[in-house]
Image 1 (cartoon, helix red, strand yellow):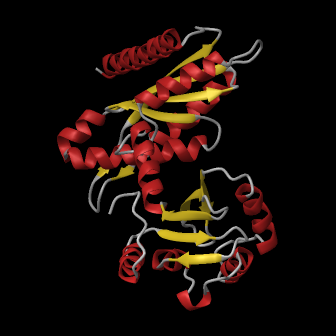
Image 2 (cartoon, one colour):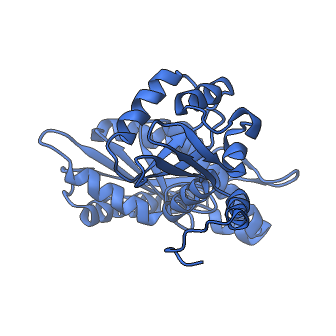
Length: 305
């Protein structure tokens, strides 16, 4: 049937109504006085309103009142919803908007004015689609193993925060890696190494709380952005992180690992003003810390010999 065809025989209309009842979306048609002319089964499934409760001629306000009574609009009254929707309906403009239901579902409503001064609306449950989109967006910016922000998100965040850095404010950056991580991988296997990295991520989160953003840059390399943090405060945070990350790791029922953490520090604008230079300064400080530890270990061995 072409869009220009206007069926007049009852069988054609029954076929149309049957098709509308079998689409997954909800569909309603109202007249110029906002009285219900048609509602399909998809609408009653979404809003959990029996067809028998929505006879032809039911006013839209009454539809909303029954829906509120079923818990579809948590914390809102029928009159409040009616005022908002009526103002939109009276503009006689098409539009799409989202509606959050009381049970957490999200409904996309497509509104279309009709030539007879009435209007139609299509209702689509987009809860799962939005959940998947949110998950994909999260995974694009986070490390799949540790769930920490990844290198891409870290770089973007660091650049943005440095770009917003105003006169007199500071930002500290910590770069850290794990001492002895390769030995854990070699001795216990990569599954144990992955478990250790997940525990490292959790210790970073619990130690930092809201004071900074940890990220996994790759392998056993991590970084922490500390906004509005002076060099002295950042050193204190680095010491707490080092202590937390150096405690025993239980990897399974019989495996225990001991690793340490080396941490480098750089502060903007003291050491650098731009992201790449600040990261290089923190990396340089990290290597300095590692060299000092190696030299100290060699000196200790020489003394004991």
